[in-house]
Length: 238
Image 1 (cartoon, rainbow, N blue to C red):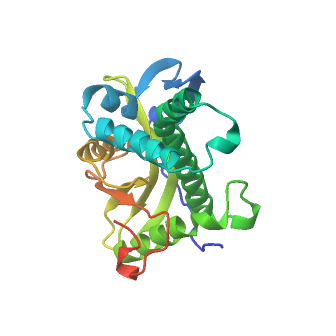
Image 2: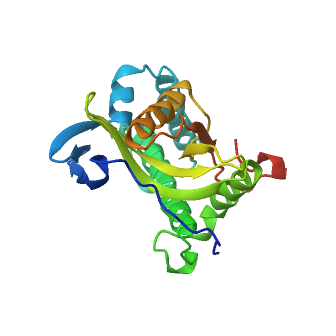
Image 3: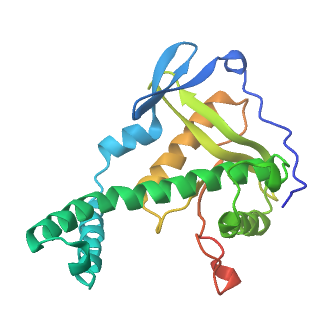
């Protein structure tokens, strides 16, 4: 799968055009340095500041689903386990299930992001290490959204920042719509859209506006992409 898009690129105004930008990862934590100065990630700040009440019932439901599957297993006796050991195994598996599900979804989403970026750079998907055919619904969904909005892609995976607030983040893409307006977007591959996602992409627009020559505040989109091909083409993205 290939694309005909080219990337003219985004040029920051001086002195930001010469800034040294790095993403630093240590253990499970990560942050940006801009000219050697530490900047927290926008997503890190939002994760700390915005409650996510839906996570608790989601984790509970994942654990209970794991328990249900185990209790319906009729092959307990053949394992040579007594009931107490079996119950302990069921509980341990249920305890780990939410993280297992979350990690699998995160891996799929990470690979989808990488493949969309590669596609927009004009790379052949067969040469992209992250590409597998199960990612096709996400790529097709993005292309459907791009066509609907008439987006000309200018840049992908561009880091923006605010040196006063010491925060930074990476936009999935920057472009112009069919009317010539600057557009920023962030791709999502989860099951739903949530209010804090609007805060994330709004922060990107604010920071990008401060780094560019006078251009007007960009439009912002959150584009949710599916894991499976929808029956109705109109459901290719949200």
